[in-house]
Length: 104
Image (cartoon, rainbow, N blue to C red; front, side, top):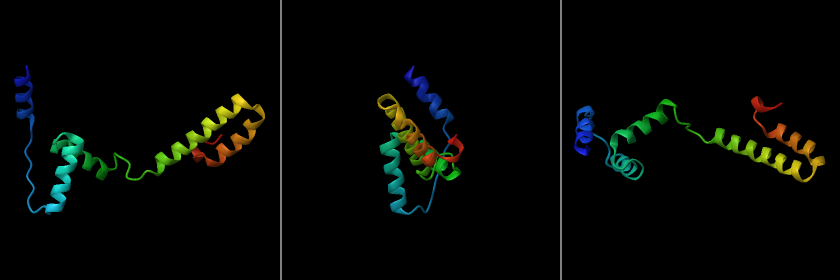
């Protein structure tokens, strides 16, 4: 069973070779492949290409904005459980901090 899987991987594998890669760059790539992809250079290359093609976010701003909005929304829920009079104030705060598309 394992041998069959290994044979399928070998038969489906493509070969790629790079020349004139700076040593520091190659060492960094090998370290990335080792630590994050179990020495799988193909998946390490795919990960890098996903960044290049924009599939993975290059910056953390959208994530930080979403976390901030979530933090405020949780605050609104906590406030509504504790003190109903705080809800309106928290809603105003949420609307001010939330991304435009989420504002009500």
